[in-house]
Structures are given as C-alpha cells and as structure tokens.
Amino acid sequence: MTELETLQRQHYQAYVKAVKEIINNNTIALVDSDIAPLIKKPPLDSMDQVKSKLLALAKKENLVLETETLNLIVSQFREKLENRFQIIKKIRLDGLFLEIDKILEKKDEQIIKITKKQLNSINSQIKKEIKDILNDLVQKNIINNLDKLFVEQDKEIKINRIKSDIFKYLNSRGIYQKQLLESIDFKILVKDTTLINGIKEQADRYIFTLNNSRIFN
Image (tube, rainbow, N blue to C red):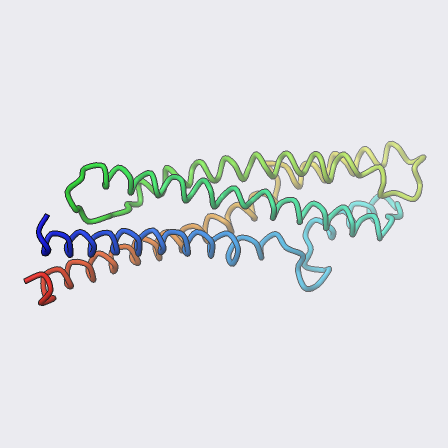
C-alpha cells in the first residue's frame, strides 16, 4: 500500500468513526432526552395521567385511596418504564451498525447512507418492544397492586370496577398507551430526520476533503 493509499484509508476510517459517533449520540439523545421526559414524573401532580385517572375512578366509586401507596406505585411504574426503555438504544444501535457493517463488508470505500426504509424496519422492532414493556408493567406494577391502594378493602365490587376501568385506560387499546406511543413516534421521526441529514453532511465533508485536500493530490 502506497503512502497515498494509506492516507486515503485513514481518512475513510475517520469518516466511518464519525458516522458511528453521530448514530450513537443521536440514539442516546432519543432515549435519554426525548423519550425519558415522556415517562418521568411530571412537575405537577395534575399532569400525571396515571395518578389522575386512578384518583378520578376512586372518587367516582366513593372510595378513599392510600395517597402514599398511590405515589409509590405510580413512581415505581415510571422508574421501571424508564429503565426498561433503555433497550431501545440497543435495538437502534445494533440495527444501524449492522447496516454499516454490510457496507464495510464490500471492502471498497463506499459512502454510508441510512434510508427511511432501513429506519422503519428498526423502528418496527422498537415499537413492538415498547408495547410489550408497557403491557407487562401495567399488569405487574399497576393492576396487580391496586388492592393495596384502598382504605376500605370490603368494597370488592367497586374495586373490581376500578381495576377494569384502569386496565381499559392503560392497556394497548387505551388512551394512555395510544397518546404515549404517538408522542414517542413523533420523537423518533424527528431523530430519524436529524440522523439521515447528519450522516449525509458527514459524507459531504468526507468527499469534499478527499477531492480538495492537497494531501490526496
């Protein structure tokens, strides 16, 4: 390999590294900065959809809730959602880096492109995982703990009605999940656009330097 070929190879390797860094930063920002705030405790209790719904259902049935227990259950639900949503990073990074590996396997120094079609395939996996996590944690952390919430445990019929209503609200067909998934979809769409543009800009810089730098002439 000549000195020029070595320099060109190093330039390409730096380009690939920069693209991977863009993908990594984009994915971390998506999960930690965009999606996490959607599930963290809101600044006002009145903005907490899960807590407000449980309080409204209890009021409708004239039942008293254990406030501290309610706060604990909802808090743990949100914390576990945030923790388990970290899997989104792995799904997205694994999928995108696999696409890059396919390009690098061709051996010649090709420009890296990430398409909407590739991202849609990865996003489908992410959305399925999110739904599975939500359904699992709604059952384990909310529905299964509702009996602990009520001061009057002898109101079994009323409590069962609340269980049914909160499940309808929180399950995959309910308002809570639909709104949350719509918000996450929007965050993903924005980050996908940013990612595609960022990778294109990096390719433009790589090509410009390759064609115009005196080092490569």
